[in-house]
Length: 163
Image (cartoon, rainbow, N blue to C red):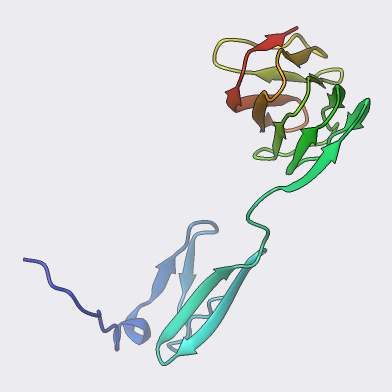
């Protein structure tokens, strides 16, 4: 049987002895009070009796720039729109989960630095190799898989040459 309505938690928090978190292990309850604090990019707001709203304050989308080249040093968590033939170079420093996206209007190359590679399900660049787009309007998104060295293709549109 299902019921619609609101769950009333009065009396539960003061009698609880700990809460389990996503990261960092259990949190003990002292004096019946649990503080909910927003971390990086998170804000907590009391919006009424017994109600806390949790908001993301960080940028939800990538910052984007149009690039005419001929050479661009990429930065993490950024999107690029090449408007002419451009050679992009991967950043030397990257953390797991960093993202780079290219949504092209012209041809482009993504050049790896020494010790870096880009992998997809079927292809891998050689170390210090590159990926070349083959048509205008190709697009690709890559995510750092191993800090500073290995990027994975999470989506692409078009045919790319891995060298």
